[in-house]
Image 1 (cartoon, rainbow, N blue to C red):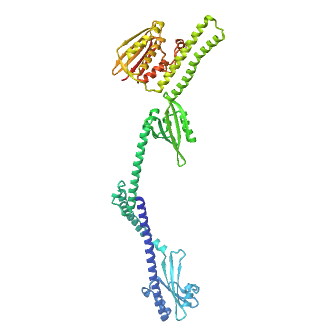
Image 2: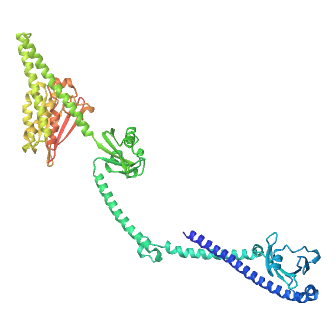
Length: 558
């Protein structure tokens, strides 16, 4: 701004200087021209009187050496006869001069008595002023003088004019610079944080009041925006779902903690391209699809978890401004869906197998194809498979009840006593398998459902016996652990492969299906154990080694 003020002031000063020179030169030139014209007319009148009195003798005396001091040399007198011939001239010989009858000032003077005329030289560097006066004897006297023209005058005075101009420009530049600084200094020192507290130009008062008003509006809008931002961050920060907001170029504008944990990033990824966070082709293609079609979804496995990404296009005033990405962890849902499908398939299979055996035996008996001595065998098969079918249905009903989480009556239960009861019931089974079953530990009481706790210990022991080896052992240990209790079932059985240890508590899961079928199990025992433990807020841990046995520990927390 100071430069613009400086240039403007300098241009104004230069314009004023130039205008002043033009006006002064014009006025002076016009003034002196008027004075010279008046003097020329006076000189002509005096000369005319003298010529009328003395004739040519007067003119000759003017040109004489002794009288020249009385005559101004810049004036020229010419005496012209009525026919236009020159009778006498103070500068040249009359014989050498052409007829002046066609001269404008001569013609008009003969016609009107007086006349004037101005003629310029070929170079326009000077002009000649003529005055003519008719005399009483019919002749005419003309006086003339040379005047310098304005261009010639300017050219003659160019050096002093340039000198004055340079000095004026320098002085103007200095003054303009100082003036610009003085004008701009109050503007530069304005305190825009407190507009109304400035001691500035009165003309700036409306602007400063407007700035103060806008500042208040901006502060209010900033506070509202900050409040909304804080609210948005609190809402998105507490979301379990990942949230990423991007502009139309894929630059991250916002990312909540859940998304940061999902992509293993922090807030430093904001204002960076989303490609730096995830380079997967499927997700990038889904974002492009959302930009084109408005919405897209894709399910991708991320770090061992199954994540569903829901991407939507953001529009403002009909223009696409970005996308919002929501990430849902659907691992549990996927596992539940898989478990449901597997459960349905397993239930169908487990129900179908004994029913087919029952139907096959019944058809043989009905057709009379079975010998009388083999009838007990077929009826025994029907009874055995029917009992297996009933046990399977009861286990399924039991699991359904546990899934529903119905409130059951609780009481203080002694786990050591419960373990001894289960061991006594399983005594005959251990003798058949050739397995030793022992119970050890101390009295430990928990608040729980007696029937469920008994079934949990029974199923653990029954499972340990089924998958044990001849002359093996099963040890049940009960102990106190602070305010809680611990039940440990350790066997010397065949063990569980490492890749199956995380799945043995799934419904109908069997490591060796042929061996499980031979053992008569339903595949729901350990799943029921897991649900009972969860119902009592207990934790189950499993340790197993192939050929060395398995240890299952149930820890109750008071």
